[in-house]
Image (tube, rainbow over all chains, first blue to last red; front, side, top):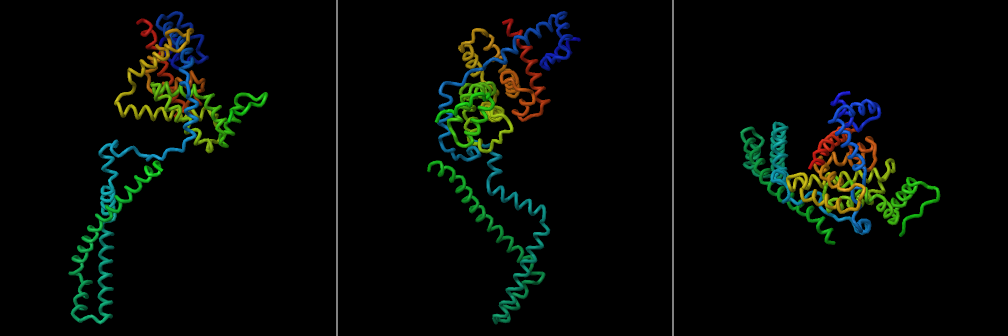
Length: 190
Length: 194
């Protein structure tokens, strides 16, 4: 056995197989003999008691298990989080990311759906007004809504309406989020 | 409520199984007996990993409280001690990670000194001044190496059990043990020469 194999034998916890050969090597090598002596001194120490639990440990555990579990938020306080996590958790970021993902994934389909929806709404409105006996002028005017030149304008209007709805959705999300975060504190106080 | 009396002839494992069964049914006396039996080892393992007596006590207490709450889900496939040590190790690693992120360093010199002084103050005449020296050397290891060494030597667990407790493959445990042995052995004569 050489010094490298001897070191490996020590590192592996002195397995029984090559023990006689390893000890024979240590008798003829000073550095390996010192390593063996160090291992012999260390192993009983590693097995010895570390430190007893402090006085009153059991009583404190028993006192704690008697208490109802504290209702605390699973996440740390928002201030303790890095800025990029706080930004990612913001409802506006989530909404923006969702919209962007939808547009990137199915932009064409969304546009076609919006256009089809607008055309159908215009057609129904025109029909309903005609049946209600509106003036010929109104019928003619509304009839144009389904026409190709009017379509882009209508679509644009619907897009504007959708954009206006986003802040309301954002404020609603914020209200829900603030209620959800204040609930555990209220329960803890109760 | 006191700890349930052991049946004559029952061995320690049977008694512990009985305590676990009763504790699962909500018997706090039986759980107190389990805490009494395992507290020193749970605290010792936590102390070796977190290196601070205050944090170690918090970790060990927290582990017992979690064990109590999770007892109804404890299936008894593993021994209570193995299960408890897994909770202690996980909590201790979490604590080390939290401390590290807070302070930006692994261990505090003051804590290592505190632990060494505590160990020196502890009456252990047969070991003389070697224990504080060992604790100083242990502080140089990573927390995973300290946990593996403590479970293997102090808890007298097999590599397989250590792997189960630390939730890592057996070969990884062997590597941690091997590196820890090499590091401790290499530092031991140098400490001796001082």
